[in-house]
Image (cartoon, rainbow, N blue to C red; front, top):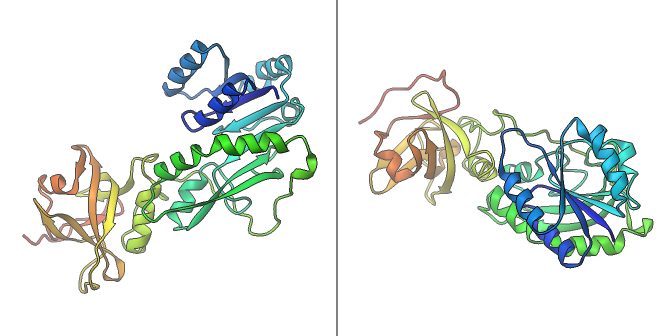
Length: 319
């Protein structure tokens, strides 16, 4: 099986190793990302191992890439982490077409960042879906679907790594099945949802409307890809990277986002909707990536507030 891999590293590293070890790899393609040099490391490493590489962008995918792919004449193209829509005539070049690896269940979790939405929404399970690529986003027939549990407290980065380690076995099975069209199943016609890439609003904590559980899910969904969930302190944006729930009776008479305890040894605790408390474990700010304990040393005090935007006025402070 002569195969070309279009992928984002290190997510597709296990696919690369499997294809390489089984002498099925013809070339590797990278998406050209402006201002990002991570692909340079992987491209250079792969070239040093003797494989041809090709960089795809929104312009050459319609011209040079088409001719390059025709000349390579692959049996199959595998895609894992690629944000450029592939023209329909190019999808027809390989004998068995293009297969895409999607870190979400289809069709209920379509879009460019399915893991973010699964974790933010508190889902208990997601899936790795391997599907045929066609002219639309995430609509092709499904070849394989592997259910994946989401462990409580798991971050996007943890889930992403866990799933990427499983790809070699799934790709092995997919290659065994790809030659028989009967193995492809149309996607269900119900529960179809397309989620866009998260906006700034999607990654910002709303203390007034979100529960402690919802805030914890959002923080986990934003770690590490979005640098943490955004909130504002004293008019400046910060990113909350890790929180943990406090097991206590609901506290009454406070305001959501209010810092109810700030101690240089015990750390930082915030009041949430319905009286639940979150301990703020890790924060990223202009002072650096700090523990909640260290953040307290910057002058944070009980009675201060985290809030949703820069225009929010700080309330009175209780010393």
